[in-house]
Amino acid sequence: MASLWAAATLQDYSLMVIVTIVGSFYIFFYPAIAGYYSENVLYNKSLAVPNKDLHHERRFKTYPSPVANTWYHFCDSSQLKNGDVMEYRALGRVFVLWRDNSGKPVCQDAFCIHQGANLGVGGKVVDNCIECPFHKWKFTSDGTIKEVPYLKDPSACQSLSKKQKTYRCVDWCGWLLVYFHADDRDPEFLPPDYVPDELKEGDWKPHLKWDAGYYNFSPVDIVDQAGDHAHFQTLHSEFMIPWTKIPFPDWFRRLVPLAICHTCITYRGDDKDWVEQVKKRNWGVVNKYMLFFSDVAGLTWAGKPMPSTVSETTEMYLGPALVVFNIPFTIGAIKIFLSMTPVDNGTSLRVRTWMDKRVQNSLLLRGIAFMLTGISASQLNADVDILENKIRLRKPLVQPYDGPYSRTNAWLKQFYSESSATHGHISCDAYKNDW
Image 1 (cartoon, helix red, strand yellow):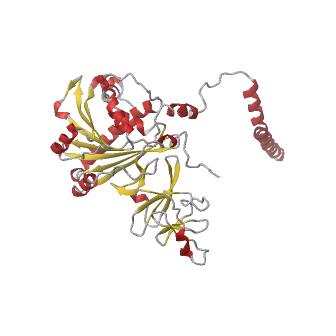
Image 2: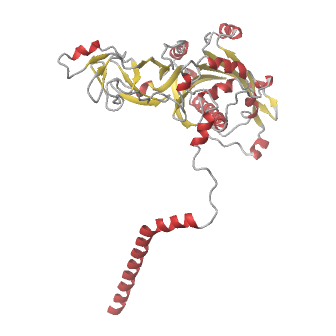
Image 3: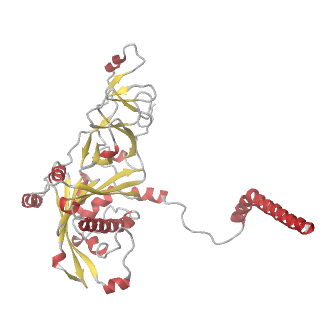
């Protein structure tokens, strides 16, 4: 028995030694062997380009700057509480967001004009000012230097004329919006009051919050969609499984031959036709900085329209970076708020939905609203796959039956000024050192 026990113990010990030796060899020598193999032994390798950063950089050079002179969604209003300080990076710049004692949002350049500390990292709201974490200088909501704590008379600093750069900032429909102009001009237009008034009067409530994520396209691409009616007939005529990029299989489409038909009209906000539409609808606003897009969509069965399913979705572009969709259905309505904020080499895409009182009071209608939003999300993602890989031709071969691309492009040009070319993915002077 003793000899058997010794043999078993020796066998276990030998196995442990072998495992230890092999493991040590693997840990210490495998990287070198693998590296030698990959460099010196010929075998099939992936032909995929490691990343597409350079490709996207070249693509973006075919576009106007993604940073137009307009309003941008930086965060949701609820994300910035009284007393909070938030850093936000977008438009090729770094901003600091905070609220004053009255709850008014404030947006300023994050880098302190004293010695460049980031006010959004460690800064505090003190005495109704933003306090720099480095030397404790205090700046008011308009950027004025209010106090330098180590002076004998801390308020004597008010003789300094330079201010912390400050941007127009408002709360609107649950969003915190910031206006940016490349030439530091005041806002050329304001978000329309009738939208929050409609939400308030109709007792609309928030429904869904969807942060769609980061994409390699420009807000300009979404504006171009409003002038490209033809792609609704090709890219958006088929259903996909809601909230996915998965099309229904062929066997299902043969069994249930449903599709979508579209009749599209685009109005510039100061068109005579749109003025008449505003009077007729008692909805909308006449403003040259707005663009309105009407999509009368319905279902088809085996290619034949089903008139009872037709309804109109109206999209309002508040400049190039914000879109509000008004989507009525038979017994309710939802609104979809879409924001596109330019960030490094791409766009941050966010969606918020609101529901009217009829939808709120019915679990069934809330489910329908969820599905309708999912259908819209899937159709949007069909666009994204195209937009992330296209270029913007200087002289596209657009035909009259494609849609009012040229008129939409002309509307877009008003959001660019002399210095706009210096703000974007490729060139930006936000970090320029002029010493």
